[in-house]
Image (cartoon, rainbow, N blue to C red; front, top):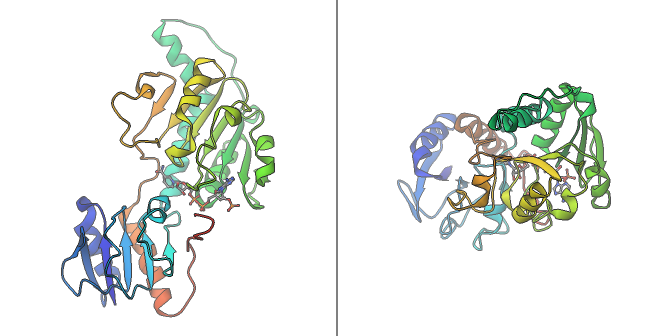
Length: 313
Ligand SMILES: NC(=O)c1ccc[n+]([C@@H]2O[C@H](COP(=O)([O-])OP(=O)(O)OC[C@H]3O[C@@H](n4cnc5c(N)ncnc54)[C@H](OP(=O)(O)O)[C@@H]3O)[C@@H](O)[C@H]2O)c1
């Protein structure tokens, strides 16, 4: 069995070693550009790719599956030469849900404890005590109740927040009010104090966080975007912050990454910016998950995480 790995060069040799250890009988080759070092360059059984490599699939003739070294696959689905007849399999959690739970809890608790307001007061040397709020009084909505979104919603509910979740199809998550179906998006958003967006990038979801949808949140609400930058209409967020409709945002993902030095977000104290780190791929867990799926496929067993190309995730 041959596995070709294509990933940013920093991690590459470590990932090859991890695969070789997990699947000792496999021949593991590293793809650099369109060149595969080591074995027959044209004939991988499995390709594992960590980034958008336009030349990756040229010459591959007998792939049984392509594994994304990430949860999101929008960048791969838009590759013109991505083979249509080979299953594309994404990472499922693989240690990312725990990271993203901590990120969202940190941002939500900062808002709930009014630390953002006190930070503003500090800049003006103002000493003004605000009434405390119980978590049950704070409505938090999780947009996208997938593998990671469901885990985040449960963690927020365990902190006592009043949690709503939204998906396209019916879902059931303990202690979370689940709303589904495009027609009920407004109902889901209505009156939220905190909106957490953890959607996949699909054509339908581009610009879903815009002036119209964000205006449905409660006055002074906080927006957390950890899905993809293209979900948010950035100019609309700035306008709603300027108008005082929103009090702040915590953003991990952006239209252009790295965020350009002259981007207006940098100068806005109400916006907390992180460089796409809320859920990073952990090589040990990712390789263990992919190796397990390869073993199952080799035995003719089904695997989870196969991307639905029509749906886009
Ligand atoms: N910032 C980071 O570091 C980072 C790290 C990991 C992941 N991510 C992002 O997080 C996304 C979600 O990950 P996941 O593993 O939770 O994905 P997932 O299991 O595929 O779940 C996606 C969820 O989004 C829902 N959804 C999709 N389009 C929708 C729409 N228009 N309206 C309402 N709900 C919609 C789906 O609804 P149904 O259940 O009804 O299909 C599903 O519940 C990834 O695709 C990636 O973009 C970001």
